[in-house]
Structure formats: structure tokens, C-alpha cells
Length: 287
Image (cartoon, rainbow, N blue to C red; front, side):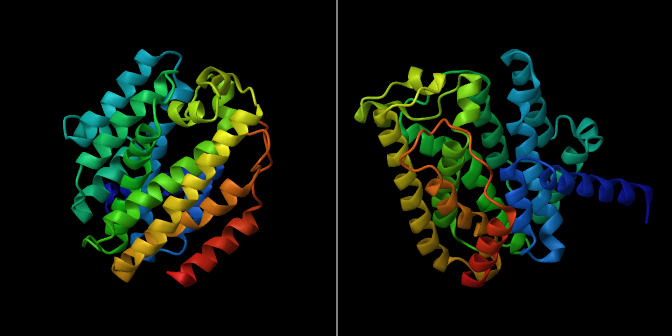
């Protein structure tokens, strides 16, 4: 093995470890990739590790301007302007190698990074349409690209399935992470859904529960379920090789069921790993 190959192997190993040792959401992705073909698994790790690097920028910077600089660095790395610098970053090296090997389009990853700029600020989510668009750019795009990787670089179809899957999982995770968002003063609950139930974005950002807030969040739970149902149905049109990329969708239902009808800002214990693994295994049989 050449020195370059050894370095690249280390980069891929770092991507896997970042998911395995990350948040519940990161570990769920790692668990789901265990069902992917062994020859493509590490490339899916690289894809999601890149997403994790972007998503955690607001957590590690002291002010939005610094976050903007980091996001711009990643965009320029994707577009080839910082190839040398990116090659020295484990996640950068792995994701750029994955893009080249599977001829992945760069535009969706650039759009993902651009969409994450909103996370640097405390502006409330204006509408359900905006929330669905945000989830589409930050989660659906990953489902879509992962399906291409799982299919060996060929397009397995299933753009509709990936679109609905991303919104379903994105909304479910936002609901699960409401205590964390409230602690930061962020509101990802769409203002039009809140208004429909008489709740306010300011109350959501402050973590203040009420019957109106619970009703608004429960409506979003149903929206996530509806998108998941549409995704499973649309998955039938995908080539079988690409369907494994949709496995994280199996975790939407348990995520949205937890705490339904209760204070959405009360921290809860994570779903036991064995239950997550069991649901993923069942979904893998279904797919």
C-alpha cells in the first residue's frame, strides 16, 4: 500500500469513527450503513461525515461570522478551489475521493452547506414550506447521494422517495432535538404551523410549553409520518441496490411517537440502541 493510499484509508476510518462516536442521529446513520454493501459502506460514511462537519459548525464557533468562514471553506473545497487544503483534512479527503469515484454531483453538497448558514442565526423558521425545503437540502440530498453510492455509482431512481424520506427524518429529528434548540434560543418550528394553533415562535425559542405548543408539535409529528409513508411507497420505484440508503427512514416512527401529547421541550432518554437496530433490521428485510 502506498503512502497516499494509507492516508486515504485513515481518512475513511476517521469518517466512520466520527459517526459511530457522534450524536444519536450520527450513530443511527452508522448503524444503518451496516446493511449497505461492504464495498460502498465507507463512502456513505464519508458523505454523512461531511454533513456532520457542516452541521456542527454552529456548535464550535463563537460568532456567526466565524461560522460563515468555515462554511465557505467547505464550499470552496467542494468546488476545487482548496483541493490541497481539503486533502489534508480527513473528512475532506474522503468526501472528495467519494465524489470522484462515484461521479457524484457537487451541487447538492454545496446547497447543503449553503442551507446550513441559517443554523448560525436565531431567525425563526417562517413556514412549513421553508422547513420542508430546509430538510430537503440538508437530509433528502444525503439520501439521494447515498442511494447512488449504494448502487455503485449508477442512478437507482427514487428521487421522490429520497425527497420525502429527507423531510420525514429531518422533521422527526427536529422534534427530538427541541430541548437542545430551545437551550440555544433557536426555533425550527414553522411560524405558520405555530400560528394555526395559537403558539408563538418566541415561546418555542424559549422552550415554553403550552397546550397550543403541544398541538403544533403534534401536527408536525403527523407531517413527518405522512412523508415517511410517501417515501416507503415511492421506494418501490427504486432499483433494489439503492434502497438500502433509505434505511434511516425506519427510525422516523419511534422518534415522533416519543413524547407525543407531552411537553416537547422536556429532555428524554435516547431510544435504546437495541430497539433502533431491531427496527433497522426489520426495514432492511422490507427493502
